[in-house]
Image 1: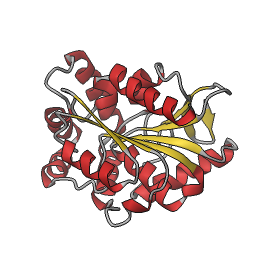
Image 2 (image 1 turned 120 degrees about the vertical axis):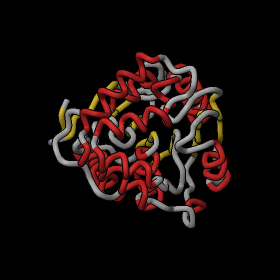
Image 3 (image 1 turned 90 degrees about the vertical axis):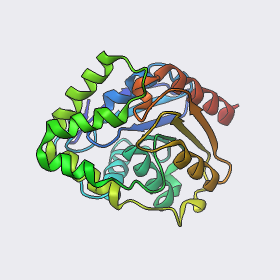
Image 4 (image 1 turned 45 degrees about the vertical axis):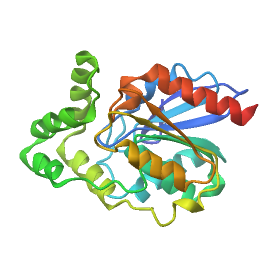
Length: 249
């Protein structure tokens, strides 16, 4: 369904807490769907961010601008407060919401992300050369060694759909994101997930993030790369379900 110009996938469950699932740079809500189908402990809303997937727009240049879109989406749907799950750039958006709009955030699931998302110059060089050189570079960095080649091929297609300009804005927004000095101010429950083979946001990023957020829980998923929700949806969902069950009793 569409909410104004934003496409959302939605699974209702009035007896469970609501979780918004935010995708990463150049991504779509589809990257969370394998996990979402197995989240028994939450109702789900998974949007395509502006300029991504089926949503209109051209993307945003800052993490804060994406966070503002999520707030407007929540307002439109009369959602006062929700759990926020984010993968990579989506995790940065979730952190921005928790820091600047803590009254709207009931808890965080932070997958393959960090308090600072510095992007290496080779990424921007590849983007300068075009979408396909970037996709080739991304594939070489983003997946664990055991990932199904069919999943990687599907990921290539979805990433290419975003287009160079949207991807460029996303990675510039990530590069400018740095909340390391403020992360200890987050006072909502948090679950931090990371693949042991993640080369884009390596495990020590996740360890630092979990250590900085009071009471956060950390799980490393063996063999997974950066595209954790796509590569290992079963184990990702199992950790989220267990964490949610602990929150709700």
